[in-house]
Image 1: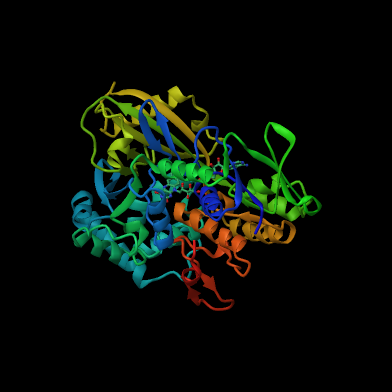
Image 2 (image 1 turned 30 degrees about the vertical axis):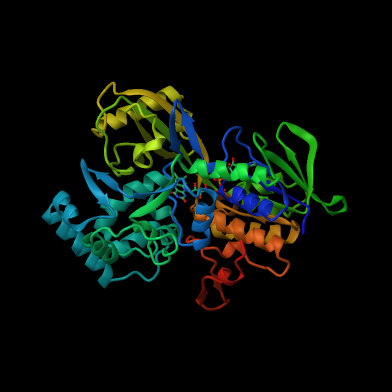
Length: 496
Ligand SMILES: Cc1cc2nc3c(=O)[nH]c(=O)nc-3n(C[C@H](O)[C@H](O)[C@H](O)COP(=O)(O)OP(=O)(O)OC[C@H]3O[C@@H](n4cnc5c(N)ncnc54)[C@H](O)[C@@H]3O)c2cc1C
């Protein structure tokens, strides 16, 4: 058993690792760059009595272990919400997932007929292999539905044409969804929330109910961090790891923090890192082959701005969030936090909407002042007809750098290079989580990669590969040369 383990990042991955290790009696030191919040991208920010997510965070997993861990950490504060989210397109609201009758009413009979015709054409003349998002969605839904319901929103999210976005993203995020499935789902009455232990067959894109911590996602990570402390672990805030050095003669890894060069933490036999894969390479002081540095510099990210607007009491929309497809507006989604949990707002009747902007940190919008962003977001809300002029009384801006790891043509090769290089040159250094593995995934995936890593550390015979966790937080082993998939290998060994 290792004496002490260093963990970089107190997001879902780092906290999960710290929670399980400290529960097993191992000393853990978690280093978190943020001065205030644990939870990473899944934190909950508090402003003048209002609480909001960095984008709304649904808690839903096909993994029973993940659902059970959420219940273990927050036995009394996980509420279940029926999902309501719609698309705004050309001044009309469309239920999402799409409902056939509403689409026909809003688009009109002629456009609806053309959509069905283009869908049938795509099915009759299938493309051999889609290499980008445009080809993937057009092949699955037809070019007209692609242009109406996928193009402008996807281009807002990624900041480039759909023809330049890898098909891997669509295959991962919209996997399992076909027009037939969506249409059939729209005809059936809404099913009740599936119990947490019966979610394996649900298509994530179509889920109709999800769990949510009463005070936002950060509540779960804050409670878990407190438990880690009670279990003897340390969670150190305002502690950005900027340098790591492996010295086997001195017991393993030593970490140094920004602002405190020369002061070393450790030694740690193992370090679990959720810092972005592109950043960890430059932080490692030991010499690494040049190809790793080149690959790391090539990984790119999409950044994200949340402008939370507080509005006077008044009527509000019923959705948890709206997708804004209108290309004339920069906002990509709007969250209505009171509809996630009534405890997210201050009880005064004032409303709190989260205006989401996808951008790069070199874009002009990222560098606008908070006041300029609040004014711009208020104007867009008015243009949508969701607020009257002068209704916005307060606001708060959150800039989330590296919110989305970008899947471009070369990302997979770069990841492979870094992954195999780190395995060769950095014993005891483990990559976990979303940016830690450059995977565009949800909390459950990040948690599962941490769970497997913990198991590998605690159990001598365990040799699970966290890189084989798929987007559904299932452990998928693919035998070389065949497409055989073996989910669920984790189950029999489970003792976490
Ligand atoms: C807009 C949006 C909406 C989302 N919605 C959902 C949803 O509905 N459901 C869902 O399950 N998931 C959702 N996600 C995904 C979810 O936020 C992530 O999967 C999850 O937060 C990843 O956890 P992580 O621990 O891997 O990484 P992060 O959350 O990125 O946490 C990493 C932590 O490490 C810290 N860190 C980084 N580098 C260092 C360093 N050098 N030293 C010290 N600390 C460091 C960071 O400050 C951060 O706290 C959403 C994401 C976005 C952007």
